[in-house]
Structures are given as structure tokens and as C-alpha cells.
Amino acid sequence: MYRCLDRLLPHKKDFFSTLKPRWQVLFGVSFDVLLYDLTSTYFECDPPETGKRRFGYSRDKRPDCVQVVIALIVTPEGFPLAYEVLAGNTADKTTLADFLKTIEDQYGKANRTWVMDRGIPTEDTLHQMRTAPSPIHYLVGTPKGRLSQLEKSFLSKPWEQVRDQVEVKLLECEGEVYVLARSAERVTKERAMRRRRLKKLWKRLGDLQRQDLNRDQLLLKLGAAKKEAGRVYGLVAVTLPAANQTVTPQTFTFSLRKQRLRAQRRREGHYLLRSNLPSTPPAALWRHYIQLTEVEQAFKDLKGDLAIRPIYHQQDRRIEAHLFVSFVAYCLQVTLKQRLRALAPGLTPRAVLEKLSAIQMVDVHLPTTDGRRIVLSRYTHPEKDQQLLLQQLKLELPAQPPPKITAQAVPFA
Image (cartoon, rainbow, N blue to C red; front, side, top):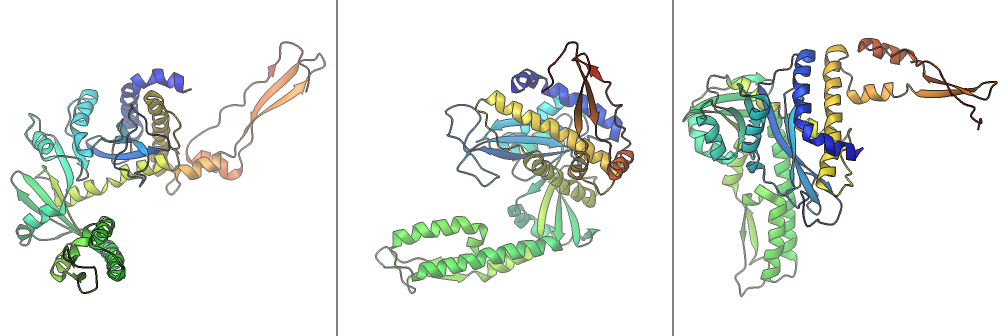
């Protein structure tokens, strides 16, 4: 099978180009908003000397394994437009420019809005998108450091309610717009995460204070604690012993930076978006951005229901063939998912497939008096709930296949 797919891989773009108009006819899908994100999938094998399997930032928390990076573009409904398999050490910020050109070459120029997370575009790429002869619209998350720069400018702007417990406000600045969003649910989540990490860090520092360590050992263990704590480490002021001092509770002390803690508490639950769509209401921009969860769901489906792993192949073209099979399956799944939204709300593709999988195909062999055999291929009759599901989806089972008679006598086993 994979040998055949080796020949099909050059036609991958044609495959997606064929699907796009088909989805438009079936579901009226709009392709003016594109969601772009990346994930990785790992291989439990010896590190290769060549190829795309490389060590890199692992989104699966498996930095011990080589991996490949998968870049995906989908619509807000989850329909994929394109994907690429990249080397495992590919940096996110180096991928966007090529994808902008890929989509334009494949689907032509159009009034598209690209929605991305903050780690993908660089300042140079955003500048090129703004200043292109036909400006390319974007909506992207922004690091919280920029919020510090714009915090005073936002104070005079009014909040706008977009849904329960979510508010946004808009600020125009140098040809761009910034949307500050505040979510009560996110406040609770971020505050709980910060408390949990700070509590764990505080306990770890207390343990180090009581251990019999020299200064070099202490610095090594502090480095590990800092890496694990992340940004929470900045909330603690640590006093280290001098080079000629031993580590004791008097020479190694730590305390809470209360002013930084207050500043972090004020910003918990806030996130900043950036766009070059000044005429778009802030509520609409926020709704576009939260649709990035559809890309995350696509990655979950690929790694969960569609079982993209394990991958046993060693050659790049076979790895890409394996991933191509997975993406064909994802295209079928998202098509079924969209059909269920209209005809059977509440049902998931997994539930439908599990229900219909009980319809089995069997071959009945009947011997004849002249030594030949009649073969009846028959599917089992659907149960009432299966029949109801088929009616709801407006599907009909094909007619039962006609019988086959072997041309010559076959011994009956």
C-alpha cells in the first residue's frame, strides 16, 4: 500500500484542490479565515543521520525522541486546506512565509485572514503582510511583554461584553489594532496554576535550604528548579551564599516579591491579540481567535481517534505516505462531522462509526450437486437503531450483491 502511496504523494496538492470546491458545494464552506498551527509526532527509534526525523521542541513532552513537525491549515469548521511534514528541528517562526506562498500559488489570491498563535509570525513577516501590494490580513496572539508597553493606553478604553465572563477592548496603534481580552474562567485557571507552581517551588527551596550542599551543588539544583517553575521563579527573590560561604539557612534565603505578585495577579486572565483589520469589531476578532481550538482539535483527532502513531517507517517518503493516509482519514472524519452537525446534532463521528461497525459483511458458501459452489456475499440486516441512524443521515445501503458460482468443481473444506 505504501509503495502505491509513494506515487500518489506528488498529487497531494491536487487532492486538496479537488476537495475544496466539493466542500463548498456540500456545506457552503467559506475559506476567507484560515487557522494555522503546528504540532509534532515522535518516533521511538535510534536517531537517524539524515532525513526529517530530528530532535526538537516536543509538543508531546517526549524530548528524548526524534520527531517530525506537522504544519496544518484548516478553516474554522475544521476543513483542511493544506499540510506539510517538516524536519523535527524546524522553528515555528520560519514556516509562515512559505505557507503564505503555498496557499496563494495553490488557491490564488483572495481576501483571507490568517489566525495564528504568537510564536509563529516574526515582526518581519507581519511587516511584509501589512505592506504587500495586496495586504494580507492577520490576527495573532501577542506576548504579554507588549501588554506592559500598552497598558496605560488601554486604561481609558471601554470594555465590551462578548459573552458571559469575557470582555474585550480595542486600541489602534501605528496601523494595527490590539484587542485586550479578559476572561473570568482564565483568571481562575491561571491563578490555580500559578499557586500550584509557586507552592511547589517554595517547598523545593525549603528542601534545598536544609540539605548539606556546597555552593556549586546548590546552583545546579536551583537551575533545575528554575526550569521547572518557569515564569513563577521570577516571583521569588533568592539570596545566594558567597563563594567562600557554606550553604545554611542564614546564607541561603528566599522571599516573595510581593510587588511582582500583585502585578501578575492584575494580568491573570488577560491576553492580547494583534491584527491589521482596523474596521473589524473587537468582538469579531476575539471570536476568530478562539477558533484556533479547531486546529488543536484536529491534532487531537489525528493523535487519538485516527491513531497517527506509532510510525514504524524509516524513510522520509514512507513517513509522509503514512501521514498522508492519516490526513485522508481526517478529511473523511471532518466531512462526517459536518454532516452530523446538520442532520444529527449531538452525535460524534466516533459514535456513528462504532454503531455502524456492527453491520458485518459475510460470505455464505453453498455447494452444488455438480461439485461447484455458490457464494452469497451478504451484509447483516441493520438493527432498528442502526436503521434510524441511516435514515437520519439520509444514507441507503446498497443492494445485496448477486450470487457467484465457481466455474469449476472445488472441494468443500
